[in-house]
Structures are given as C-alpha cells and as structure tokens.
Amino acid sequence: MKKAAALRIALLAACLLALEAACRFGYVSQLTIVPPSEMTTGLIAALGEAETRTEIVTTLTGIACAALASVSVGFLLGCLPRAWPRARTALDPLLATYYAVPTLP
Image (cartoon, rainbow, N blue to C red; front, side):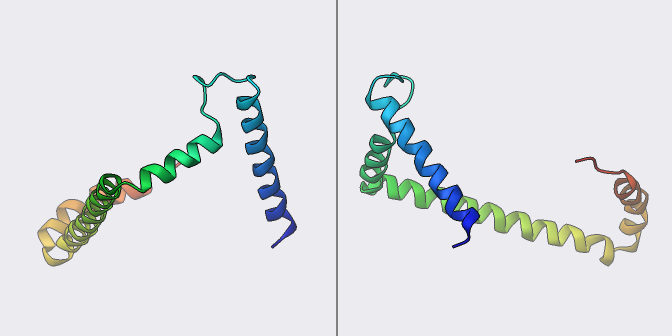
C-alpha cells in the first residue's frame, strides 16, 4: 500500500473514532447524529432481513433494466441517421451546432 493511501485510511479512521467519541461523551446529541457503531450494527441487522434483501434486488434489477434500455434505445437512435439519409440531412445542422458549443467545467 502506498504511503498516501495509508495516510488517507488512517485519517478516515481517526475521524470516525473522533465522531464516535463525540457522540458517546455527549458533545454531539444522539438526535443530531447516531454513533457510527450503532449505524454499523443497524446496517448489519437490516441486511439480515429478507425483506431488505428483496428490496435491494428489486432496485438493482430496475437500475439494470433502465441502463440496458437506455443503451439500446440510444444505440438505435444513433444508427437512425445513418440508415435514413433524409434524417441525417435534417439532423446535421442540429448536431453540428450542438458539438460546436464549448462546454465549460
């Protein structure tokens, strides 16, 4: 592991420990933020439930279907001007204008 990566991990661990201590010793109200250890145990308990896992699978399935549909439709719409010369002629000024506009960071 590189020195910079080890330093980042150590800094993250120190921040988590400081937050845990602040929550446990009452510097930060439990209503403001839950201690990281309680968050972790809650996460593990939630992932242990079948209903939560079902919801996660449903969500990821929806994301995969949406990604597949957007790539497929985008590919087909991208091929459309190539297949139809009239569509290419109509879209050429729009695409030329779109690509000529500079993008700012």
